[in-house]
Amino acid sequence: MENSVVEVINPKGNGRFVLVCEHASKFIPDKFNNLGLSVKARESHVAWDPGAFDVAVGLSKILDAPLVTSGISRLIYDCNRPPTAKSSIPERSETFNIKGNTDLNKDEVSERAEKYYFPFRNALIECLGLHSRRVKSSILVTIHTFTPVFHGRERKVDLGIVHDSDNRMADGMLNALAGSSMNIERNQPYGPRDGVTHTLKEHGNRRGIASVMIEIKNDLVVTLEDQLEISQVLASALNLAAENLNNRAD
Image (cartoon, rainbow, N blue to C red; front, side):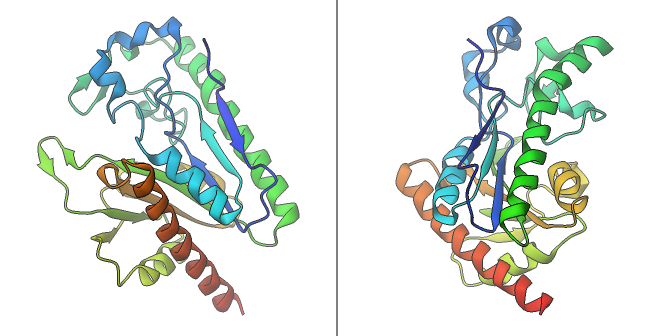
């Protein structure tokens, strides 16, 4: 069965933030024959961001924020990439070759973008437009997780605060989290150099609204208790960073 391509949770939220989770789902529609991947690969981080959806839902509740999520595995289409990016439909991810994504013709690539990217993009545009009518200054926040070990190397960072050219929210969050026991770094383990800031640029910069991307090491959000704790920590930091934006505007 087909999952919903995109879901908007708490669409009438009146908090200041609009949340996004591009890699919320590992769902691969039947017609793609699992992209030729094993169960292990389809369950792994290459197919989605484990824990990201649950943290995003927790933040949506705490912050009374609308949340836009993709219902499709990023191996079918990575909604944090524009259709012009080859990585939007990856042929290889970490150690896995994605057989079902190799040698696609232009029509097949366009069909995936039309069916999976543009509905997500349009839902986010609509959500931001409606939110801006209720809230004076929207703030865009995208939620991701990353694997503790990448290509055999352990990652030391626990939490990454990622930004593109607009660093206002990132600066505020880094200041708010300065006393944390977690290892928190700017633009790690991914940053603009890795092409991961498409949503921030497309929907934050272009609208002239503040934005930030949050990357969480996925072994920190395994249990419901972990997810709730991280959600509370992030909500506090986001609120403090937003207050700082207000002060700068004044």
